[in-house]
Amino acid sequence: MKNRTSKVSLFGLLIVTLTLAGCILSGTFVVDYMFSFSTATGFYHYMVDVTTTETWEEHQEDIQRIDVVGFEMWLTNNMANEMTFNVYLDDADQPTYDNYEDVDDNATQVLDNLVLAAGPGTATHVTYGMSLSQIKNVEYIKDVAEAGRFHYYGVAEGGAYTNFTVDSVRVIITFTAGS
Image (cartoon, rainbow, N blue to C red):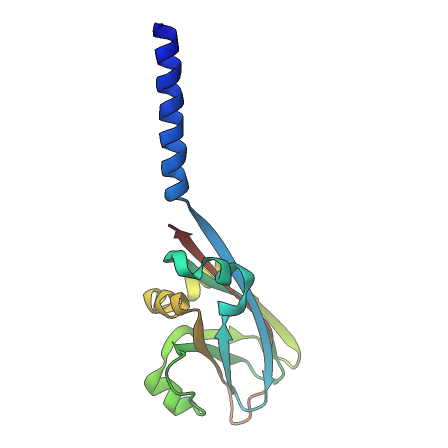
């Protein structure tokens, strides 16, 4: 009889554990979003929208927090001289700025003075690991990333005529979701 009671108790404990686990399921998910651009003006805007990715759509209602935001980027300097590259972000609900002065006054800088080697045609690669040590205003990045949509501004400085190509930007957002 004692053995049977132990088995029933163990079975009951297992059912309670599984029921609670089913109600408190959470996990870490990664959204991988890519874009590219080329400009001869030293200034570029792109509306990042990760809300259309399958992972985001599946978990957007249950996002508990943004854990990490990083990027991987390949850039090509098409000028003979070295130049610096900066990235600004802004909330998607804000207006789109069409010049550097408005971006600098209103958006938040998240990458400051990344040096692009002299070209023409010289590539610079920023790995995901490197990005984590180069970005700034991390809490702001997490705030705009949580909405899933934000303005991205790429700005290069290095002369009156600045020509560069961002061959690829991969925005990587890691978040925890659960119920």
